[in-house]
Length: 325
Image 1: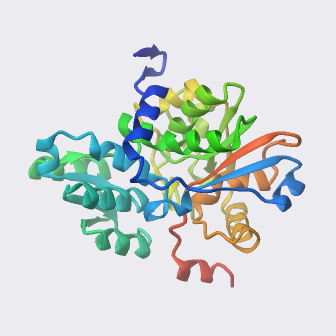
Image 2: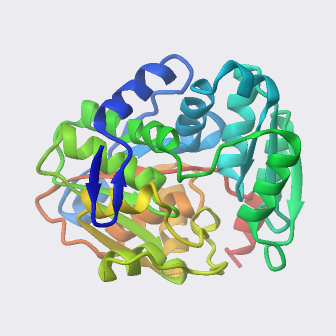
Image 3: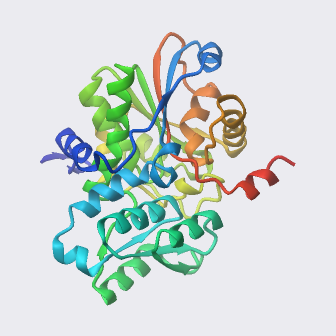
């Protein structure tokens, strides 16, 4: 285990490779799409890893399945608890159903209804809370202790991070070496896992995280080299409303990520609908973060080979329709 000034590095590429074997045949190997229009617009050769086609509609299934599969028999028997605004909730619920593990999911009252309904549809018990009055982690921890449940956090867990990194592993195996890899960032699970994979498989690749401007805690953490927080950011990117990176993800981001960028909600919405209209793929706001950084000109990518992780497609279509008015 490597110790850095930011903390220990608890995940290595071998963990990502192990997760890839563990999820093989259970997670989907999602498509890598290209677009001549995008290439012309950016002057780059762009490869979109489309995790909106992953089981339950987002990359989160990778980490959830990997983490649940590594539980002890006793932990699987007692069940698990997860907390999430939506995609991790659905991922743990589905992975639990597949592995015979009963999940309890703590979700905010204002989580997208489509995500709450889907989580219940996978067979999970959903416990709602008011994010303006309750500390999510403390509430979840107390509930887990009272019921004897193992906690599977949404990003700050080595097995979750390793699972998420398999998305970049597959992308580089299919597309070849990259100059840049753009990845959305909430708590840094996907970003750190993908950065580890890119560092191992495409050593010259610069991994860049993308956050919503209203929830820029990871960007500020990266710039100041100290862990920053952002309390309940009001951004349409609901999957990136995390308070801060964690003890697992922060050191990994500082070690393997080259830069951080932000996009505002207007740019994010514009990119989301452009992807719908021009590439014919349904992407949720958080899922469009990485693409927005590229399409809105935040990165000078002319002549480069660029990978973009489309992280998910679980959008509330009724909400999306309202944004078109």
